[in-house]
Image (cartoon, rainbow, N blue to C red; front, side):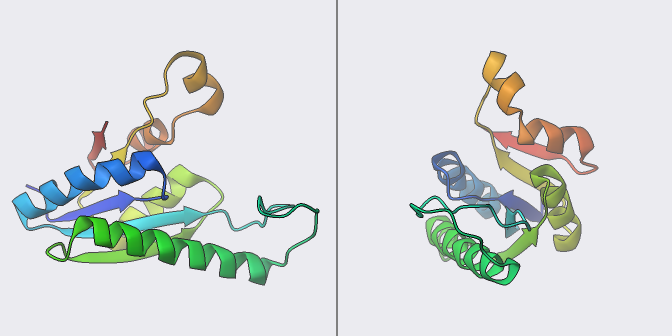
Length: 146
């Protein structure tokens, strides 16, 4: 059915759990998988492992994001298994949903396969839904795994 899956990954438990289903989909259709990680191009004021506030340069922030993305890609690729043909794409964008959509264009994917946190009610209103934003703005089909 689909020949090229774009799969946003972030290292979260929700993202990790969806990879089992992604592997099944990819195997069933002999589809290629492109993993995409989106990082914010602007460095935060303080990293979470710091006890003191300090400024960080754009260059250092990019190094940290690249290293984290590489780690997420390695873990996701391992979880998908050696039988799945994977590529990875690190996108730097201030809006996560737009970064995912940019990744889909760059990868020339024919479907976006996303996990959902299933936020409803007040959580959904306050925290928003990146999955919903991707669905609304995507020209490609979006398969939501829950």
